[in-house]
Length: 361
Image (cartoon, rainbow, N blue to C red; front, side, top):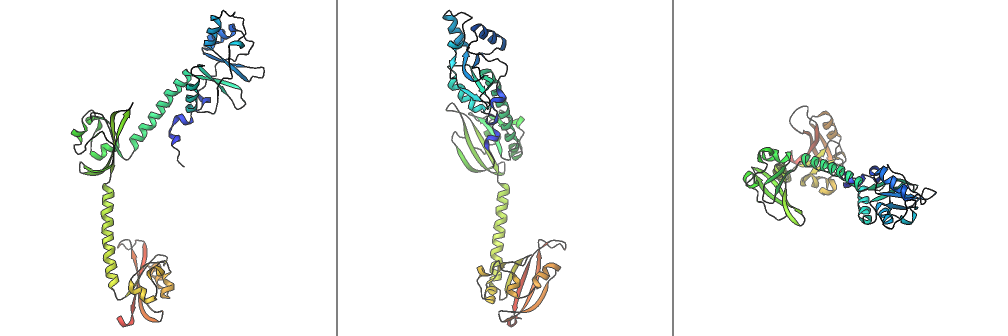
């Protein structure tokens, strides 16, 4: 099943991929002097504090060092009294989005969050620098994905600003309306495509003819900070759909005509597919076998006409004629294969079997 998150880099980028591994842990007995040395060496604003089992018991943010110095603490003072106990931590398997939430919650307490592995051991630190770096990567990847979707979409897209000036146009829109984006960029859309009426409202499913092309238009306002800054217009080319609709109407009318002609026929007509399954019968055929249309459709033609000539006609591709007894009625039956077109080498798609009662011959 398709998952929309698969197109969102932030959903699969893990904390383990983002975290900083260049640091050393503190122990409760380590002095403020050691803390300062680690800060200078690793350029990090928060350090994890672990016990003798290397399990996390706290963190030492730089603001706690300032607090200690303001209280005239000696540099040989252990760090334990000034550490933040029971800190929030992250798992290496958590995602960018989950870290974003934790980062907002803990921003007022620490600058970096501790990362633990599946054994609850400290394996990394993640803070503003790592988050901003990966945010840039996420934005870049997301932009690339959106740009790809914009360009390969079969629907035409035109992006305009709030005054109606063209900002973007995808290749599909260029093809639809025979335009070159480089030539129309920055122009008013009403000058380029006067058939389009731009409004500040949401419009879905508008049927219009633009440059002689029938299209369905969706017009969606682009909102930023509760203010409309532009609109996105999507165009669906329905010329093929209209062509198909006309062809279906022709087929429907032809079917009605055929039904009328065959319904008026005094002969029984059975139409079966290549396997011999009945697909159509006229009223006379129903009377001949004493069944309704619903009862006949789907039955093997051999069981109704008591002959294997339809299958033979299908196999050899030539018409067959035989006489048979259909429910006590003597009939002459012709079996004519029909093809997709009149070419001799065209595949046979079915058989038309016509039963002539002796009193009609």
